[in-house]
Structures are given as structure tokens and as C-alpha cells.
Image (cartoon, rainbow, N blue to C red; front, side, top):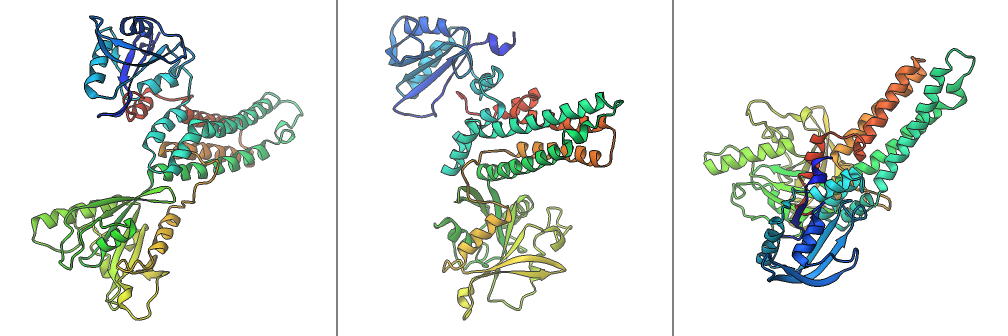
Amino acid sequence: MSQHNLDTICAIATAPGRGGIGIIRVSGPKTRQVCQEVLGFEPVPRQAQNCNFLAANSQTIDSGIALFFVGPNSFTGEDVLELQGHGGPQILNALLERILELGVRQARPGEFSERAFLNDKIDLLQAEAIADLIDAGSRQAARSAMRTLQGEFSNRIAKLQEKLTATRVNVEAAIDFSDEDIDVINDTGVATAIDATLAELEQVFQQAKQGTLLREGMHVVIAGKPNAGKSSLLNALAGQESAIVTDIPGTTRDLLKVEISLDGMPVHFIDTAGLRQSVDVVEQEGIRRARLAIEEADQILLVIDAKHSGQDVTSLLAPLISLDSERLLGPECIANLTLIRNKIDLLDGEKPKLEAISIANNTYPQISLSAKKQLGIELLRSHLQQSVGFQAPAEGDFSARERHLKTLEVARKFIASARSSLSEHSPLELIAEDLRLAQQALGTITGEFSSDDLLGEIFSSFCIGK
């Protein structure tokens, strides 16, 4: 019997601080004992009962609702007790200490969900969706997380595995009958089946990519020389005065971070210190942090002053240097760069537009706008969405994570290899092995094949009490 079946765990399940209701959860083999000691009786399973929560001397710690679930018909698959009382920190801590005195231990972050996974109540995708639902930054992200929690993503993976299983059966049959005059491969349509699986996997991948963007969003760095209008652009995008705007160079000295939502996708904007030579120690540190943020960004908005139409745009890229201060991140290295021609309101007849410009034999998008007058801001928002391939959420979308995308890529690689081997009439054993490895890769998404290290990394990011 594993350790998680031996221990009884408990935790406060509600957020820290004062609240109208505070909840403590208990799960494990000593749950019935906790009922007898803390409540004085064992509640009727699955019925809410109003009662007192008792200390060791039988004095009342609190009063509220007790809910008892008998395993395996519970969230964790074990006996579970939920005590719903008043949300004062002192009351909750006193009740928690009382339960810990009974040989129960404090739960680790995510341990309730981990037990639900280990006891086959949910798969790994659904477990991750619990955390995604709690952390959802928009209604669209919450809806996508709920669809994953309800099994939408898991069902798609299961269908892919079923297709691979059927194809593997036919390939294995062809191996078994290789000495006989039977063309199992062509008779069973293995090539067609592999093509269909690849097409469906691509569809799942694209939906998972949208789900990943809904969950994680994108990081956008606003860079440029002092007084180019970086802070004004940030304020225009955020729809509020988040950054201080003055005509004094060097006003922004540190990274200023603001998050907004574009059709449900979180976009993390970072306003940086103006890139220039400075003797000010504080400003130098701000510039160093700006360079670091630039290197880690999904998209860089390089803001230039449209009034200076004669300036050499290539020279504007020079400040985008790495931390070693010697190696230029030249145009050939900055694939995620968009030039922003700001202050077009100061030019007669200039209107917002998106165009492609050539710099040092490379082509970059350039948007002409006015942050101060809110001209071209929607054009920029749309461009940012398109730059990462984000589309407005649709019915059937589900939440996903970066690890899911990487694993789907691995599965696609093995299936494509099997298809190539089939076309080249390679040994059937190689095709069967590629299909097996693809199926195994898909199994790591739902947790069918998962290492303890992966499980530890996933559940450690959960809240305590979930």
C-alpha cells in the first residue's frame, strides 16, 4: 500500500484572510475517527448536517456544516470530511490544530487533487484543469478550463489513442502474416488510417495551442529611446494611466508591468527604461533590466518618433543588445520585432496603418499610430493577436499547457515517421515501434505514463487544500 493511502491529510481549503465561510477538508483512513472526535458522531454520508466542532475538552470551537463522503464515492476516492464554518483565521487555525492532534498531517499543495488522480477519479489533464480554473484570468480561460475538467481534452486524446491502437493491430497482423500471401497493410487501409490520425492530431494541436495562449498569454516588451512615447503607448493599451508620462528623458527607470486581456488572452506588457547611454546608476540598472526583458519577450515593440522621418531605422535597432554588451541582436536575430511609429498626430494627413518595411535585408511589420490620440491602437491589438496565431475562443476549445504542446509534437513526429517508413517500404517492425512510441507519448498527457518527477512538479503548483 502506498504512503498516500496510509496517511490522512487535512488543510484549510479557503483563501487566507477573513471571510464569511471557512472550509477545512480531511481525507484518508482516519476520517471516521476525526468525525467521532471533532463532531461526536459520524454524519450520514452525502448529507449536510448542522453541528458543533469540538475541542479535546468538548468545548465548542465553532459551529457550521459537516459533509461526509465515503470512499470511493468522493473527490479523492477516500473517506472525506468537509467542515464549513466561519471564516475567521483564528477559528480556522484552532480547528485545524485540533484535527492535527488526532494523527492527521497537513496536506501538501495539490495533494487532494493528486490523490484523486492516483485513485483514478480524474486523469492528469483534469487535475491540471483544476489549477487552471482557479488561476483563470478571464471568463474565456475559465470556460476552457472547465471544458478540460469535464473531459473534453481527455476525450480527444483517447480518440487519438484508439486510432493508433487500431492501426497498430493491423500492422502487427501484417507482421504475423508476412510469410503468407496476404496484403494486410493495403487491405486494412493502414496508410489512410495514419493520414487520418495525423490530420486529427493537427486539429487537436491547434486547439491546444489556443488553450495555452488563453492560459499563459504572451509577453510584450515596449522598448525604444527616451521620449519616443513608450509609456504613453502602454497607457493607451491598458486604458488607464499606468505609467508616468513626462517630457523628461529617463522618467521610466525600472520595468513597469501591466496585464490586459485581448479577447480572453492575457497580454503581459512591460514598459522599459529608455535605451541610451547614461551615467546615472539607477537608470543604468533599469536599462540592464530592459535588455534582459527584451531577450525573453514573445514580441518586442520598438517605439520610434514619427516626427524624425529622416532617421536611420537600422541605428534604432542597435540598442537591442544582449547582456554581454558586445553581441548585437541585429535584425537577423529579432524575428519577433514590430516597429511602432508613434506621434503621427503631429504629422499632417498621417493615418494609422500597418505595413511591411525592409531593414538590412529583413522584413518587419511597422504600425503608424498615435498613443496620445488613441489612433491605431486597435490595429496594434489585432496585430499582436495575429503574431501568435490567437483566435477568439470557440465552443469546444479547452485549456492546455506548454507541456501538452511539446508532447503532441513528439507524438506527431513518431506518427509522421511511421507514415514515411510505410511509403519507403521499411520493415513493419519499425512502423509498429513508431506507432507505439506515439501512443505512449499521448499517454503522458493524461497521466497514463507519467514519472513521479512530473507529478511532483505539476501538483506542487496547486493551492493547499486542492
